[in-house]
Length: 245
Length: 245
DNA sequence: CGAAATTTTGATTTCGTTCAAGAGATGTGG
DNA sequence: CCACATCTCTTGAACGAAATCAAAATTTCG
Image (tube, rainbow over all chains, first blue to last red; front, side):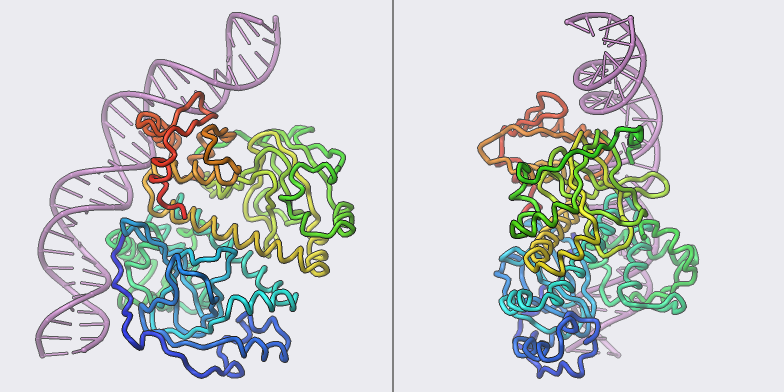
């Protein structure tokens, strides 16, 4: 139920930048890799790259769905808001991931940048076209949709049945997975604020903050600053995040 | 956190029945319709039909994923359970719907019959094969996966931010949609028990029961018996279920 | 460096859970 | 087909955990 700072809609919250797929940092992660090189070029012609500043809105709920996006750098959040400002962050989108594909003709949530980010925008029509022509592309999309569905079900269990500290632990474990952080590396960055975490976990900012404090007091994590976590006791964290596979 | 009656594992909880796709009640709803008639026959050879009695287990979490299922009659539930018996009903599966497709090699939840049901079981390998050979089939699967993902996100918002009465209202509206009940028909059946509803909504049985009572007291619904609801004030119900699109 | 925003901590209230018991439905065997 | 036993659902009372309200501490950024 956190009130989010309005996305700054001033002129340069969103800037088109030159496209350079050959040097794309997430090329092998991204859906693009599902296409053979010549067709990847065809895709490239339909794609535009955009720089977003923090809190910029890439799409708004209810708008016609014209593009899908692949994140190159930074982090996006998917946000659903009720009339009375109750908010839910459905998920965070990290580099290499794809967002915005759906049968619905309109967006079902806002897509916003958590931090300054860069995305590739794909024309929906072009995607439909490529889906029809390159089975491998459609195959990749279906695999990803299945994985997203599995993740969504993890989140559902968390929201339905876990206590606040367990939700936070589960979130940290899940995020480490998404970020590809190895079990050996204790450090992790939390680009999003407490409000976003609260709205993702179905809690208030205060409860999230208290949960962080409890994990710290129990020696499970250290908090050099609000945006950096060090996992001191990975086993304990995993134990709390029982929801995880 | 409701303890569920154990699935009766006696001999005939699951029975193979003769297959008759031509007379399938859900033929045009089901994924089968994505294949042209000759190939539908190929599919038919890989499919087996099963009768399940109430609470029979079709799959158990952790088991290798060998089949996916299309429901012909009755109702299934997808259940995730934690070590300490906390339970979540991820979703209910109605006739014409498809379940069990995922990249994961093992099942992530139990698949159980809510009431006596009939399903068609598809070999996972056969599906993979058909996906490769018939783009229209894969296309249908992707569309369905996207829709399931949208639904999952509706549920996430409900779990994260709605009050008990709102959750129940949202559930009733959603179920009516899934069941294809028209706005003109006030009656609906609730095949599942209060425990399943509670575990779907992230509440206790008591709170679900009280929420039903409150909706009844407010004149929004009537409850001829615990398994039948009559929607007296559809507008009020929709208003409460604000989560809905 | 200083102002604004974010995060943390504390006190109080509220709502859903828990515990307990009674009412009603279901289904089995006589 | 009915009586009885069992299971499910509903209702009530007490408790407790998270929300809310309030304010101090810390971080961020111009």
